[in-house]
Amino acid sequence: MGALRGRPSLAAAVTVLLACLPAGGADAPAGVDVTASDVASVLLVAIAAGVLFTTSRALSPGLGRGTGGWAGQGVLPVRAVVLAPVAGAAALALLASPDTLVSLPGFVRFLQVFVLVPLAVLVTVRDRADVVIVGGALVGAATLQGVIGCVQVLTGTGAAYGGERVRAVGTFGAPDVMAMATMVSYGIVILLGAGLTLRGRGRVLALAGAALLCVPLALSLSRGCWIAVLGAALVVVFLRSRVLAARVVLVGAAAAVLAFATGTGSDLMDRRLASIASAVSDPDQSVSDRYSLWLAATRMWAEHPATGVGPRRFGELRDTYAPIELSSGSDTDDPVHGYQRRPLLSPHNMYLLTLSEQGLFGLGAFVAFLGCLTWWALRGGALVAAGLLTCQTISFAYGDIGGPSTTVMSVALGLALALVAGRRETTAPVEAATPVGAAR
Image 1 (cartoon, rainbow, N blue to C red):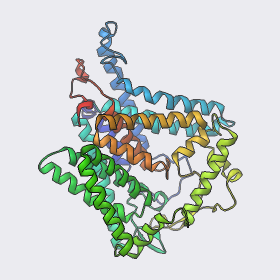
Image 2 (image 1 turned 90 degrees about the vertical axis):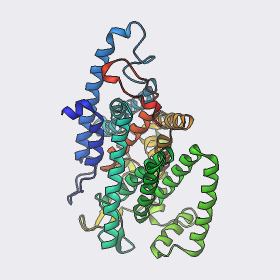
Image 3 (image 1 turned 180 degrees about the horizontal axis):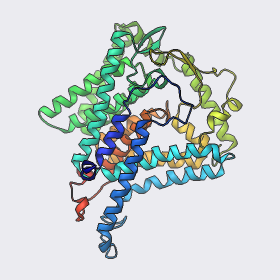
């Protein structure tokens, strides 16, 4: 506990690392499973509240003289106010929900993921050492998952794809098939941003680590994560140097043409790459189901345009609005969980999930939150923050929240918020540290 008092950001690191605990074989009821990482996130929020209380007491003598508060060197950076509309819109959707009791757990989860945990990370990340602690935990978790994923592919113990267990899923298993790829994506983006910022041996090690993590990312067979990481990498490189970005685009385009023309040497990878190009003209079943779920989400919103159908009610109302083409569920298989038929209870698009469950108010607040963070990161040239936010905004186009990796995503958003918040150094003892806003 002494370490947590001295470095409360360790609680954020623990939240990330606990998400790597192996998934059990039992299938918890949908939407009610609480992971060790969720429990750690509650501890993180409590610690952040303690830090805020201590800081406010240390600053209280000067508040009347304009040296503290939101406008000055106060308890929270001014840019933290971007979280308020997100919480307000979710609360409005809860109050307007036809079934408040059903919507309450969804409201609490949304508040945890997009308000409380990012705010807690912002509060506990106070200087460059804290940035290294949280960023290092994200990279460490990505590395661990990547190594496990590579072993799974080599030993044939991953998730099933095309009748063979050849898909890298890390400790998350087939029920959360994109979680490992998401965590590895964060590691790649952080290492790339750090590598383009550091010099000497640190640069070499960071860039080499990012390159090595591309192996388990490829073996995850997650098409969305490939696109998200590619987009994030282009943004990070462009912010570092436009000339370098132009060279990377040329080399990448040539490599893509070569890969599509001659293949990668792996029939499985070639088929997965080809499915990206045919996602619109000839979608496979998983993409077709996603389109059907998107249609169901838009139909829900059309009937409840302002505040949506209520948090956590998409799964309950799905069959009322979904087209007949939608499958009854998706098949998953791995050595731990075995074969399962899992229902499709979300639209696999965070924007459409928010639109359908919280309406235009919710989507507007959510997009404003992500948009402001991304704009601040791009304008300030914060490479890691810009990369994480670009990766996440793209990822939300094909995925939403759910599973143990959700708290990791929340911590990553909090780290990005801390990097762009523009926190200034204060004279209070608990805040006397290098300002995060200057750590690039």
